[in-house]
View (cartoon, rainbow, N blue to C red):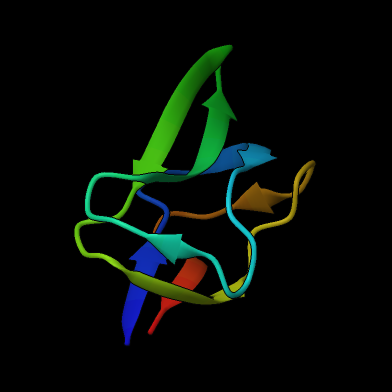
Amino acid sequence: MAEIRAEMVANVWKVLVTEGQTVHAGDTIVILESMKMEIPVVTDTGGTVMAVTAVEGGSVQDGDVVAVLG
């Protein structure tokens, strides 16, 4: 299991994956928005998306889990 975490306080602009989807290292999981800048959250490892905790239009804090890979 790998937890993908936000690295800053931001709004969730777009969620690019769904549960059950296969992702590869370097894939963008979500795009955050802060101060009119778009910040991609990428995965360091590949795997299957087990859970997506980020919600478009929601917000995240530094260190919040946005997705879990299995």
